[in-house]
Length: 396
Image (cartoon, rainbow, N blue to C red; front, side, top):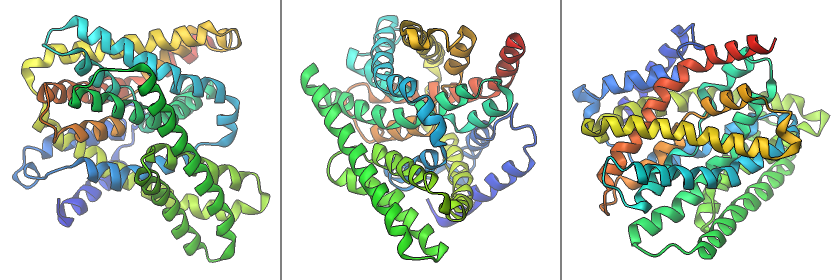
């Protein structure tokens, strides 16, 4: 992809963000996705090659760091129990139940590991298009905090789980629970530790200079350095970037003298975020037509529906099973959290990681999964605001 392609995508993103006055009804990512699908039919963009490394190594570290850095530590502390359980136990249960459901529905011939692979790609959520809507439209701030916090953590845990399942699928090895669980815990813990240590160290090093532009440069080093270091050591770079951003945010929040620095960093990253999102969602649309097989469209809708049903069952099971949360989360709140679990950039990054593989039913898996991701963005995104408003009126 050339520089002129990127420049035009950025300009399109600027135009959409500027003129989309009804973002609550037509979220920008959904609009960008549709424009991207349109661009895929133009000769200028139809030949663009989008790789997993482009998304995973260039765009994703910054986006993950931003989401963790901007997430208020007060919201994380208040809901840490729910967020942690949903991002670990909830994620594993969702992948297993959804994988089994896809396998047994079986409208398209899929192996069990292939069905699990689809489930692992569809599990990470992307709240970028809905969190701001939830904060404006819902009477319960905890819903937005849970949706955002769950997404922030399950990005990392889902990558680890996906890596294990993808390896088993491609290699044909037998699944061994103890070995897979050990790998999962090692890779996850390693990423978290590296990110926290890196984030704590940078929060101290920031004070060696009082020039704000150099402190911003150091935050870029933190976002990407923690990711690349963790990946180099064989642990989760995603969790490293997330924990690094969260640690830096926490350290700045605990010191009253850091308000000026925080404002400066916020100003920088608040410009970077929409720029990256513009490029990413346009690229998702451009790439869509290369993978979709419309012969499987019926099964794609079924997979999308199953992903919502399974997510609701797992959420309800966890939140109603523990006495501590049983009264705190009403059924309509569980429904809204379910609907707000939209698929997005992480799912596409995982999907593109498989694109070069020629194992098994890879073309079928790519088509089914990409279709379900796009349906999630197109169907769930515009309905978050009306559902949130309706539930708020019911409880007022």
